[in-house]
Image 1 (tube, helix red, strand yellow):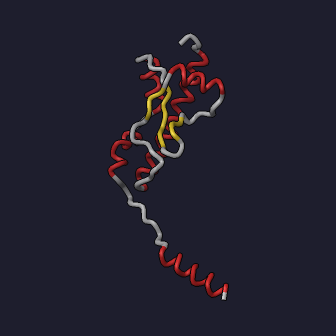
Image 2: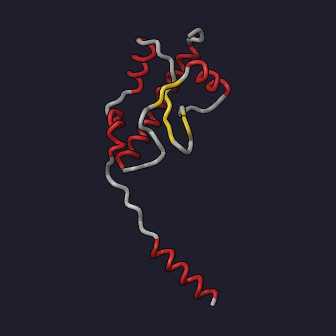
Image 3: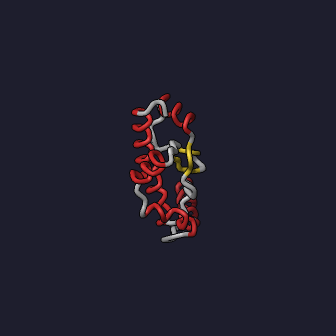
Length: 128
């Protein structure tokens, strides 16, 4: 009897569960498409060396808050507090399409590359 009940529950659960289809694209991807042409190194040189903007880049997600895509150490925490940050607008961990997920992953990679360059720069220029 217990086996019959377990089988019935399993069948009912399977019938209610549908394979989620994620769309190929979504309006959320529009704001991040610039990442397909982005060059973190060139942007770093423009922002830091030309504009003297030493803020770190962050990505945003509801479950993880703001992330800088750097290993969190006392040094990096101190530097992010001192220099501040600017967020890549439109990033989130709520994935609305395949394209959006790809672009959010690019945003994370971009932030990691940019912030690694910035961290090296700030170590070499401690008076900045």
